[in-house]
Image 1 (cartoon, rainbow, N blue to C red):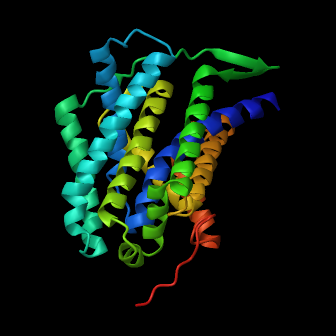
Image 2 (image 1 turned 45 degrees about the horizontal axis):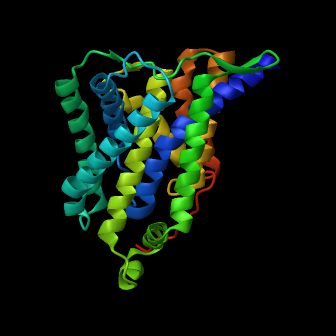
Length: 300
């Protein structure tokens, strides 16, 4: 029983990371109805921004909340700028083009970031700085809660609560919900569509940046292709929960994290990457729109 509860804690920690990245996918889909495949590589850029930011600020050998917070803010700004730039240069000119054109462009932007990362950062893996010690924070009997797991869960929860508040309580959040439901009517009511879309990319990219720091602390090896597998799993989590649904992205991320941890703990780690797609196929067979997704009827 103690071993099971320990795996639950680890799975929640991993699931929270998947959920943060999945939120970026589902926000863009909810507004523009297309998948931003470059989102996973913005996450990669965030990891390297933290790595070089730590070098520049002298945080390589420093541990504590202050370096973590400073680098988190820095990475959120960098990722927000990258997401904003991609939207303006790559996606905005194609906004009225067929969805297939935008999809191909998204794949092209993803490949560009991956190979540009190899040229700029180098293809060799780099060791992420240890911002927080991976020691026991407290114990409940034989169950140990590590500092990193606690921080990952705490920071992820704060970001999710902040996102929910922004979407449901602010003027821009209401505009985002209006655009996701009917962009034509929202535009007629005075909503600035361009501004809403830009904010969507900025917020989603910022969440990917936070996830990059959390992943870097837990798995301290970063390289330019690191976004491929993590991004794929986060995308599966978004589809699993219901693409376009913010609660669905969180639920999907948690299911993914818990499932992977249980497979690693009780079966074999070699099966964990295949598990995500197995779960996705199983869920979509019975509920094609995802767990919390809704089926939309489109006229053709």
